[in-house]
Length: 212
Image: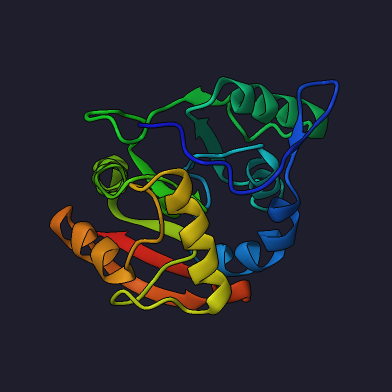
């Protein structure tokens, strides 16, 4: 998968931890909605864990679940493990290098997948490959909690979304916002169905899909 475009500035600390302001801003509403789908006593994995701040928060909020963070970038993998060590969470595994757009990757089976702010940063073929990979690694009945900014039938949800999309495609013409309908269509083809579509702060959405 082509390295995704950074969507926020991350502050680097001496111990290898990265900290992104956006991670702190969206954490509380994500935790609130995610709680309905977290499997107690089972495994959950996160695609594109970024700095690792969300991963440790998930592990602390849901201690009966084993959390597997992943990322494509070596510096973020270091950051994830540094956050894990700093917070002392025992139900979070070491970060795993993963290019989720590649075929046949295997992490599961797991009962939950979480992805935050990825789809708009990568080309559509890569996004479709991520959908297929998540479906392949979920157990039947497992859920995918997919959070981020989306369009609907080509329409943006706000002027700021349209401006952000324009800045993304200026950097990489293949990146940019995806239509929520396309995500659902790819998911259906991969054996998943929509359970919920949740309005989130700042015009974001949380699409929850279930593996049939």
